[in-house]
Image 1 (cartoon, rainbow, N blue to C red):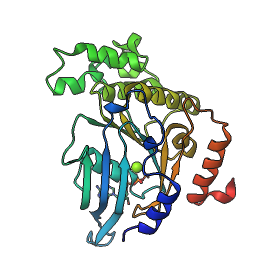
Image 2: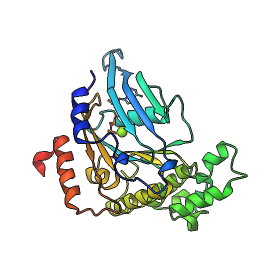
Image 3: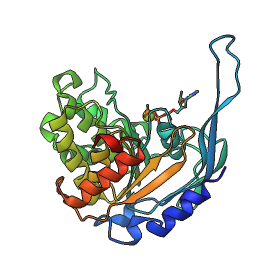
Amino acid sequence: MVNTATATATATRAPETAAHVFPAAANAGAGARIEVQGVSHWFAQRNAKDGAGGPLQVIEDLDLDIAPGEFVALLGPSGCGKSTLLRLVAGLEPASAGRLLQDGKPITEPDPSRIVVFQDPTLFPWRTVWDNVALGLQARGLLKSQRHRVDEALALVGLDAFARALPHELSGGMAQRVALARALVNDPRLLVLDEPLGKLDSLTRLAMQTELVSLWQRKGFSALLVTHDVEEALFMAQRVVVFSDRPARISEVLVNDLPYPRHRSDPKLVELRRQALALLGLGDSW
Ligand SMILES: Nc1ncnc2c1ncn2[C@@H]1O[C@H](COP(=O)(O)OP(=O)(O)OP(=O)(O)O)[C@@H](O)[C@H]1O
Ligand SMILES: [Mg+2]
């Protein structure tokens, strides 16, 4: 079923994209426009008894636009379909129904202009930090002519001094920054982030949130972030899309037009947090 009621209700409260209302990043032209149009997705389901089973619907008739240079966050219950949507947007698998477009062209396969950063940095332990970051360029045969891009990406995440270190010599936060540099070296037009800070201690996490926002502002890519952390979503993103239980449908879109840098104690953030928690069924505990 199309969630038109919600979509229409949302549209009256919130503009289609926050980026239409206020400038996203200094370099917003670098960001991709992403359109998710009527997308549904099913997986084959195996039941415990005989391994057979009907399809499991994970996403239901979803419409979502990301404007060039916009930062959008997704919040929703565990297992509702957030990572699945990211995989579809990244082109890692085709949607069962509907269309996904980047700058008007169908997304049919992975592309270096769309890079995903996962919760686990998954660095190659035998390769130095520099060699890990160089992977994408190497795979595309660009490393010889564009070695400077590796140095630039490491400088962007503040790890130039650790270029020759091995992954086991890094802290968790540093390893995650290497993963970010490995993504940024490709100069993505869309950065897809699946709980990229989920394994970090809370202080490193707060620092990394600020760093990520600053990277986004400097580079101008579009960003699509999945997080379980309501404050993180609201601190970083211009729009926070709250999903229902599986199959994922849009329950609400919260627009956060606060300028950057943001202050965590800003009354508007506190109010948006209250709204987001209520939408996630946690309203009573706050
Ligand atoms: N490859 C797959 N084959 C079958 N089912 C899958 C597959 N990938 C995901 N699912 C199912 O799809 C549903 C949504 O999974 P998904 O990983 O998108 O959830 P999520 O919202 O990212 O959850 P979480 O917040 O816990 O990461 C789950 O029920 C999961 O079991
Ligand atoms: Mg997930």
